Length: 257
Image (cartoon, rainbow, N blue to C red; front, side, top):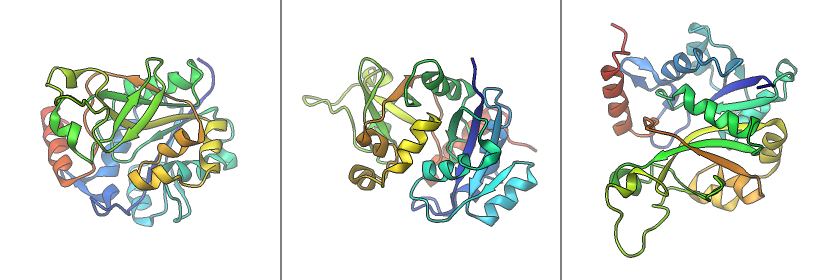
């Protein structure tokens, strides 16, 4: 597979549901540290950096040996922050860009690879992943982003609402363990052209309503491919998520003594 991949972790302190999210302690260590430790070992990424407008976040990342790019504070989304970094001369040799969200401390390399391959091998403008919802709690939670996709794998819509909606009765547990009931995993692979196309548009009406940046390119006509992967741990969006992630880290024996 040709073309180098640049991984970028956009990290900002402003978060409505989890204050100072990148610095929020997970098992005694800041969230951004867990994310960085995860992606620095991924061979599918040729290089990775953290993009932030916070000197506090930058200081933590530098102490870990993570390359940091300081960005403007006004960006409406993580992808806009990623685009600012990608335009810099130091990164012009990279063909593909991977946006690794700063709230995915248990992200699997296989999922990152699946998103990249949708773009590099599948010809999609943007590649991302989804996993079965599994529970009715996830189906109805506004903090869990759902995605509906076509048979081709093309994303039709992303929402915090329960989609697709089963009109006649609530879906039973077995149904939630497979398509079409999918939870979106917040990672994005882009070609350079698709990334520039995405950020050339102002935040869209649906993006602002749902607070979901991926609705902007969808409204603008970009083709987003969605790979359905196996079990995936949730990201960190709420205090309840913090407890779940800490429990999972303990099960994996990943918490340093």
